[in-house]
Image (cartoon, rainbow, N blue to C red; front, side, top):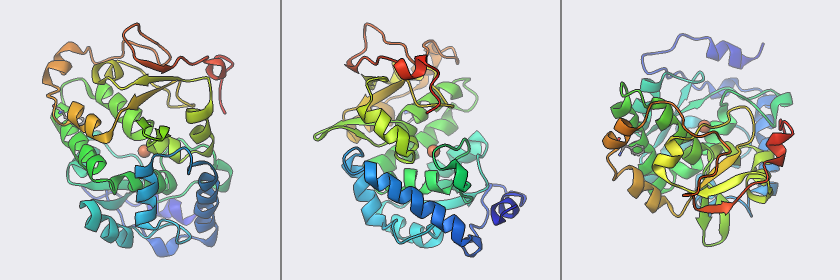
Length: 287
Ligand code: PHE
Ligand code: FE
């Protein structure tokens, strides 16, 4: 297979980091990055939040081809103290939390195959770097990500990791923000998908409801298709206030460890921006 197979098969170090081996990417692999970048630039300027777009610009992720993690990290570190480290793919929870708690973002070093441009289950370098790294250039969001890592380490053994994973999912991966320019995307899982970038903002199908920490942490989510519900924050400062500055201890006591609400649920207590038709999910979804 490709060079990425060789890289991914190396035994992980204790923190699971591996060399990026930037020199080993083929012209085709760099080209995959460029194609995805161009596609997203057709849809994101009017849909992604300015924090994301500014981060993208500040880090100059459009030099052509897959970024070199060392050089990218030197730029990012000057802005917010974060660095990007290469890992073979998904890493165990405690390893992941420890990286975030120390302002290291673990990124897959392999890139998807040309026939997986619209969908890939395991996060690759395009999702991890294009999707996540621009937001790490935002000082408030950078603090949120570190706090999440620390919160994760604290939550190990509480039985509530699933609930904490939902928080990551509905903010870091699939978050929307009610910005001064209207509804905008900041979630990495959305901005790295051309199709979901349009769907999350333009489509009548999904629910869009106001962020509420406990309500969100009780809600199951989709990992195989577009989300049925997006949670909308007011600002990154507000998100930080409701997470970093809130003790989750009492909340973990109340949670069962499982989910109480299905992904499409709307409650009477929700502040609803859009009550989705759910037509897309009801006819079976899959893009
Ligand atoms: N304040 C949370 C706690 O008490 C930690 C946390 C911060 C969790 C930010 C998620 C995001 O555990
Ligand atoms: Fe991700």
